[in-house]
Length: 79
Image (cartoon, rainbow, N blue to C red; front, side, top):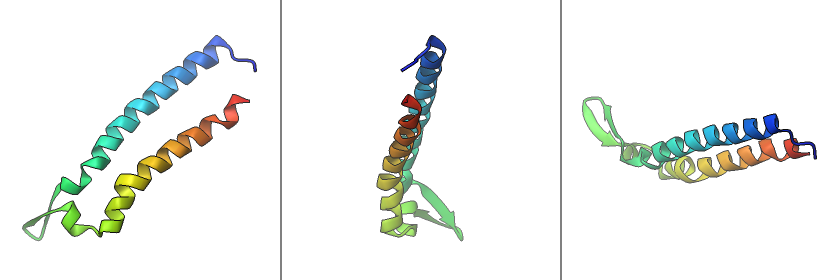
């Protein structure tokens, strides 16, 4: 495997950026149920407005799919 210093540095920087954005996104997604939404002058929490299955998909399945997608991106490029 031919791994030059330029490729290594670019991979490290890319993983650092992805890790930072992913951490911010996970925090944002994890608190989505407690967010307050104003609909027709009445305040609701998102967990009261959304179906529980949609909220579960957003807070559980979405981060798992993101990590799988990042892994799938890097696996073929390691040849």
